Length: 158
Image (cartoon, rainbow, N blue to C red; front, side, top):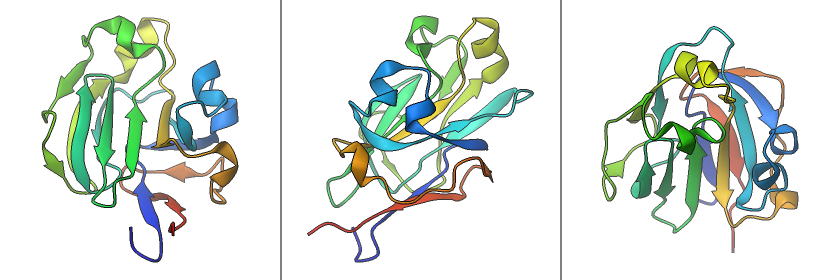
């Protein structure tokens, strides 16, 4: 992490929503970590999901991935809610666990229409792992972002 903190980019386009408004109790309570979520547009179809930070892919599933930064901070992107139930069907991975990625690199492509057709929410949490909910930096919720836009800057630690 630089002195300015960890800059986290939007992994996909949509509207920024507070974690407390995510319709999943684990994410809403920030049990995994703190952050915000991105609600894709209702008409979004097939979209690329990008790496929000530079680092090594610690975990990769079709529906979620964790990027470990050089400073040791994990950032989780969970594409949609309960999307593990889809067994990878609407997802195409472009990486493997252990790969190095830079901010903006394509990680996965998802068919959001298929996620919605399955009755699941496409809202996508972006979480700084193991961070307390009260440590979320000020974020303008309700604003539109495109993939790669700055989402938030996590304060420098130490």
